[in-house]
Amino acid sequence: MKTKPKWYRKWDLDVPREVIEASVAKYGADPEKYSHSSIGETYCPPDSDALCGKTLVFRGEGRVYSFAFGELHAVRFSEDGGEETACWCNVKTMDGEIFLVNQLIPGYACSRQVTLIADMKTGSATVCDAHVGTEHSNIDVGREFFFGRLDGAFPEDGALHCFTDELVGKAIDWDYGKIVIKHMYTSNLYYTYSHPSPNYGAWMATNPADYVKIRDNIYLFSFVEERQHGLQALFLIDLNHYHDIGCFYGVSADHMTSACIGAKGTPAPLTTIF
Image (cartoon, rainbow, N blue to C red):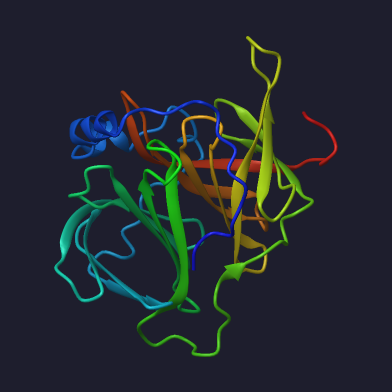
């Protein structure tokens, strides 16, 4: 299942494909270069070893993704029964039941990232399969969401994850440790954020967004910085505890990122900027 169709609204900001490929070649093989964030590490939980030695097989919407976990940060990835590829991964969890697995897949000139959200209690799962470069822009991240189940002894009647509008109309101040950013979930296709800026007084943007329901009060929220540098952000949001974990992904002329972050949230009014 692809993302929901949206208008395309891009400023004149792009870089040549060969520049993207050069950045991927320089940074893409070294997690020390791409897996750290300048914000959001304060509230990001450490990587979990709970999946070490396990294999998770996702099946859904005609796709099969296999994740064979070795030691911490090591996974062998394959799809549709093909050859395994050794990857470096992050494995995050907030409750020991729902896991976020994030990895870059080696061998792609313009980069590819696969993120798995796996509910180990219900067996329901979502894969976000993302890549750098779209029909509109070399620098924007394109992606598809797939909903399915994990192989194994899980309940067979549990609800699949699905797109939702349950976050629409809410707003949250997210504290990333160094900055506080207000997220305003304004429609089922877009969201708006704002934060104070010492140089400009306020920074605001509205970006295309996708919302997925994982469980009651647990959501996957993702957007692409369409009017900026094309980065994808993907957050697993727990509204029971107002905590999120997620990752930023993208490539620029002189940098590449696939970094996990976390934040603490506070409910906020939708009708104010700060």
